[in-house]
Length: 237
Image 1 (cartoon, helix red, strand yellow):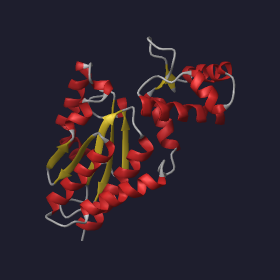
Image 2 (cartoon, helix red, strand yellow; image 1 turned 60 degrees about the horizontal axis):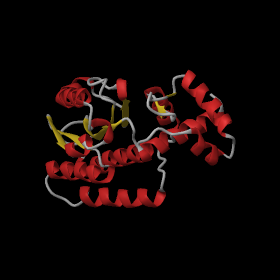
Image 3 (cartoon, one colour; image 1 turned 180 degrees about the vertical axis):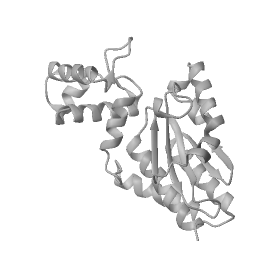
Image 4 (cartoon, rainbow, N blue to C red; image 1 turned 30 degrees about the vertical axis):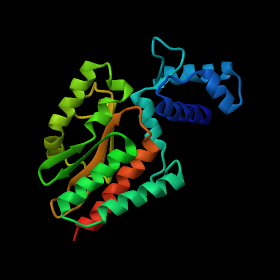
């Protein structure tokens, strides 16, 4: 992939996350200061490589799971799109987590804050239980409003998530499962972003979000990572 193709893919991922509509060549041509024909040629090559696809009802393009994976892998580890917004979000997380209370309440507060900040479903393990909040956020996303099969797939993922986490124990500080990478509910069109943190409950406790593959990955990954760090600082002796 050329540098320009990489930048075009990045623009498609971020624009699609913002507007939930396929991204056309005219918009990108203005952003890159080249002709629409040049953008169309680059998009055709990205499509050939299976990084983007064209919905049958639109002339625009949307990312594939492979395209999202390339984008996520290319993000720097601690990068946030808007530094000012990131600082506000981090402060909100820290305030809710460090506010005291029993560990269960601290973890719930962290999840509820992630729900408010990302407008997705938030989740965390508390002992052997899975706490979930923001289910209505998830199913109000455009991707899930008319797709019954997708909703069923999401439900299956949630039903099996806690035992899967217990058995598999993902060991990275931040784990991102995009679309068909998910262990269950592969056809749900959803992404699971989870952070492992140590607590007095377990060395493998998790907090994260579940949302559509159309994500603001840069910001959400940053927030989930920070949530795990804040919880570990407060809960692990």
